[in-house]
Image (cartoon, rainbow, N blue to C red; front, side, top):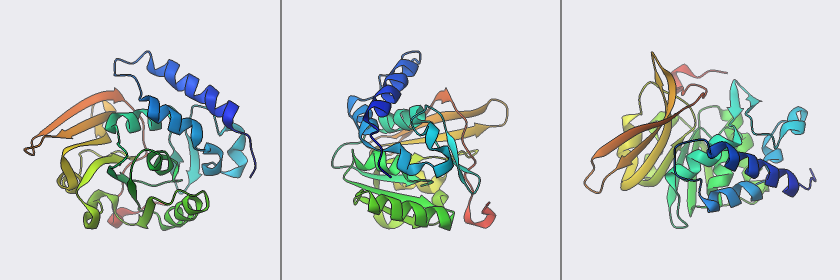
Length: 222
């Protein structure tokens, strides 16, 4: 669909920047904000929700899944701080929007989606839009994608009670993993996990968040 989204995207980025100014974290990367301007979010939103494509809010995309709030996409991307030569793993492809943002910043993006229908749709959408450095497959994201490990960075777009050990193992020394983690008493919080050059793990909770749950293949939900 044809849509001049530049003005809408500019307003969205302004809102993201203003929202983040009230958070006690480093500023969102300028390169991330530029990627947010360039990627046409309306292509990743269901037709009946096009009116809200550039609002700073999540939307349902079917199968009990959502496209994340743009602010959270920008924040998580900035927290892993991808470089042009990085290999990034995304767990939870969904609509493909987060992968599209990552594709503007990294050398290669591997994305795993449990729900086959979403995986197929995202793969076709990303290909049609020219995001050719993104590879999508259907699979259990909690197991990562070991064939292409280790990864410079990992983004997980669904919440679990703990960070899967497979993902920590597939993170390169010096790499960063960002994932929402659920606590029985305090709800979900966004965690930043850094692996040192010697393999030591530093896990920091940075912000309360709300994400759909991370499911494994044995408990697939539609």
